[in-house]
Length: 321
Image 1 (spheres, rainbow, N blue to C red):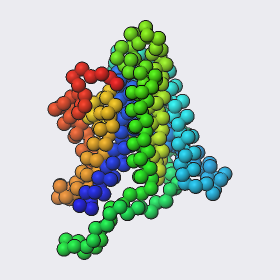
Image 2: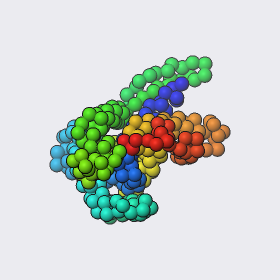
Image 3: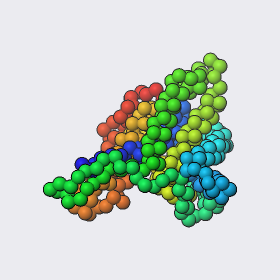
Image 4: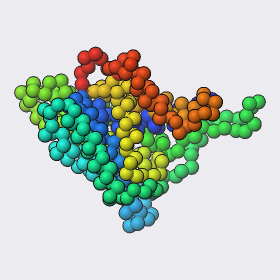
């Protein structure tokens, strides 16, 4: 039971990050019908920018608290990621707005490789140790006493940064839901996703709405990148590829184009991945270890696409947002 609860908590942390990144995928797809495969690299740039900002702040003000350093990192990462994502939309995607769908897809892959190369040139190709911003001592949530099966006590723990990830991601998802459903910008996004030509006739600027969608997704990806780097205490130029791919998987599993589907898909994928990694050795008799956990994420994708191609919360003819 202690392993199950511990892996469930780990899955919630992982799923919260996947959900934030998946929201960026699903919003852009909802408005443009475009899969922005460079979105994972925006996460990477956010993490590396935060690394530079926190390192500089520590050198200038060594007595700053961990929360202050983390805040500095987030507020440094957000404008950089917004600038990268906005430039990406203006330079690469907007000229291909009416092109065949294969053209922007190939372009997205090219942008992803370009951003990885630029990051490698700026920050180097080695793994960077992310500065410690919060105490690493875990907080004990549950304590299981020894019994006839175990002669030692077992604990269920969570670290301060994991708590911040779960609560921060929850607040961001609630805020995004409010933004889409209760504000003029959200109404403009939903109208543009439904019918861009009709929305423009009603006084909505589709170009502004599309740029705003990329910006909102970039903000979420920047915060997710800082969370990933702070949780694993490492940052590098290739760190956005796999989380980005899994977040895309989560968006498809939940029903791409559906905000609630992206949230559900991210949380579900994180929990399943964590549980499988905890029990994978037992299930395979020691043949496979936790380093093979990635196969479950893409196995779930294949299963969902086979049984319900529109995703768990998707419809046959879904509203895009």
